[in-house]
Length: 451
Image 1 (cartoon, rainbow, N blue to C red):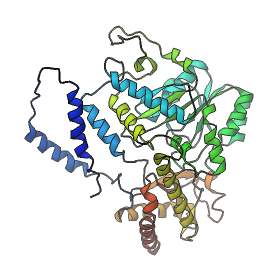
Image 2 (cartoon, rainbow, N blue to C red):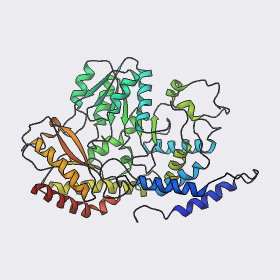
Image 3 (tube, one colour):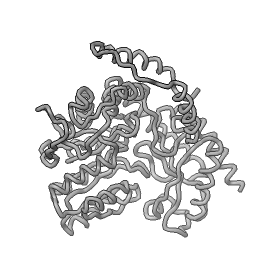
Image 4 (cartoon, rainbow, N blue to C red):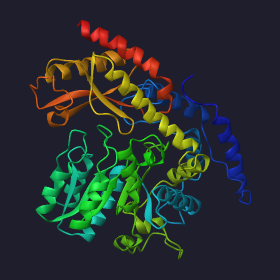
């Protein structure tokens, strides 16, 4: 079967161990109508069949990666306690596990000192980073590339921060000349550098941004929600490797363990290089339970109640698979990039397809060969549906003419953008399944071409 269940007996063993820690309590039996629960749970299972097979190697569409079995089990185990990591009184053990897990993430980026915590995902993490930027540089604008996640523009509207989108180059990276032009106009407080765009997997030129920072004095926030873990792998191109090696110099960064960190949703993380920014979080609450002199995570986060289960799952995963170069986790991530390089190589050698950007991480964008941009868009959508009928699930994404025109000089551009097929090869198994994926693409292309 495709769904991993071999690990489930371990949960019963762990629950027995957990319960033994409360043996001194009077017996307390919680009434449970097993038959009623069973009936509803079966209904849930049947309804959940209405999903794409996100867990399977033939799913290469959106950024959906199955949690590691240890993360699932640790998350479920903690739910019997259901800790709240807002204050130590509500999540004593899980709060400490969060601090340790977040410190391990900071160490991955070579930060010995930091301020940070887990949150619901990249959107909340980016919001906190830009909120701190506003506190430090009130009235100054935030700049991010036109391929940056749309959440930055939206967050700036929520926080009432002026926002500017910066043009991208033909590699889907922020154009540093365009950024310099914006900086020359003044009033830029923060530049968001995306370390792996969700559209094309592009990595903005951090090295050049740091050089500009020395001259203009803005903050640099790295949105590494998707790409951050690639700092551990050993098969990046040299320019990309150099940019990741400089992440320790940014002012703040975001990484999402629920993307490449093998965690259930939602588990994001925001990190600040300077712990003194914690002063902006300070608040007095007359009714919450800050009853200890130790640091409560609720004192350094905008969110209040947060699931301790997320911290427990992340801590367990990082202890099983340490976040170190050359380790088992890093090797698995390197296989994802190897799968992307392999698919890109096959697309380049096949005249039925137009490959675009060489992948920097593990996302590949491409389109069926066509005479015009509108025809390429149409064929991409047809291939999307035909491949899905063969159980290969991809995604379709729109990219601007300015980004792709130099890659496809033979194409007649009768539109300002083109729909491309986008494949996220986020599972290590994708490398082993490349022949099966390619066979379906071959059959699908022949079917679409005949039409």
